[in-house]
Amino acid sequence: MQTNFTPDQLKDPAMASSEKILRTCVHCGFCTATCPTYLLLGDELDSPRGRIYLMKDMLEGGKPATPEVVKHIDRCLSCLSCMTTCPSGVHYMHLVDHARAYIEATYKRPWHDRLLRTLLANVLPYPNRFRTAMGAAVLAKPLTGLVGAVPFLGSRLRAMLDLAPARLPARSPFDRPGEFPPEGPRRGRVAILSGCAQPVLKPGFNEAAIRLLNRHGIEVIQPKGEGCCGALVHHMGRGDESHVFAKRNIDVWIAEMDGEGLDAIVITASGCGTTIKDYGFMFRDDPDYAEKAARVSEITKDVTEYMSSLTLMEPVNRADLVVAYHSACSMQHGQQIRTEPKALLKQAGFTVKDVPEGHICCGSAGTYNLLQPEIAGQLRARKVTNIERTKPDLIATGNIGCLTQIGKGTDIPIVHTVELLDWATGGPVPEALEVAGLGRRLSRSVPVAAE
Image 1: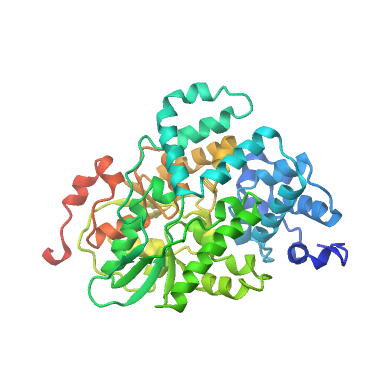
Image 2 (image 1 turned 30 degrees about the vertical axis):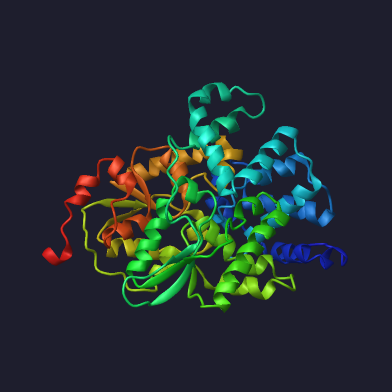
């Protein structure tokens, strides 16, 4: 793609990076075949190629964002399926992230849109605020129909209440800074991201990961001071805010790396993992953080990625269960992790089935299902239909957003991959399986030593 940026424009590192990405695109259109919004809407401007043209015109011309451009960029899920498909290696993620920051700086959204985005940015990344908000949402769920009639915000508020849990889990005893010692000789030492929304909605995920890692001889630490990775606000174009979150985590993890040392920073939410692995790029021009951010990104691993570097112990529990594995977009497209989670589940004794159209997003995509509920709902229905075609006993995934989104569309129990690995190697039955009545099948499992 030919570009005509001025020398002055290219002095801006973000603009120079985007210019290189734009020049990589050859207009081939392969990306349109795997873009969820293009499949649903059939509009070229709702495809990666169409959005690239819009972003080029906006950035190259130095123009303020227009409502038309904002509409089509906002509809992008950042699922990154286009990056997996692209034969030319166009780094769409960095381009659309830059475009969103540019939109945030040059476009004044309608008041109700600004209000909602400010609310999300000031609640979701903060666990205590988010817990309070979820408590209020649980109480307000019976009013979902009335809320849906609120002018301007009705569908979005209804989506928020619909995605809220029926009850709020209790605080986890693991949700605290501290060290969790290994069982037996120490084979490694890792930090685990506690995060922001996940410990409020599903504290059992990190509990299972810590037990699993400890069981395999890994010391786990949750350093004091780490928190939200910054992904939620980063993908809303609020770069300054995301950098504050990221810098805090970088400082905390570097202190551990330079202290007792870390073999990895383990992530149980793949959306967070994709962003943390990109810290090196985010801070590439920061003289104080470039080197530190790159070091953090280099050792960041999804929990299944890290577990694949160990030898999974022989299962002590077995059950004849069929698992439909849903690979989050941030896992398969963002981090290029595809085989490891399924291989671990098979080693743990489960029958694993791939989901048809597994490369197509479920519609969660961070805050997307709150900001674009109609499109997100269509994608969820499509995903659930494909999952149910495999006739599984349960669904496994590695991202809290996907689990929440898909779980609202089906009665099939859905769990985090690490919960199944934890159970198979000696942990408790995952709560979702107990609630679904599968606990009996699991409790009748025969220890391997007794077979």
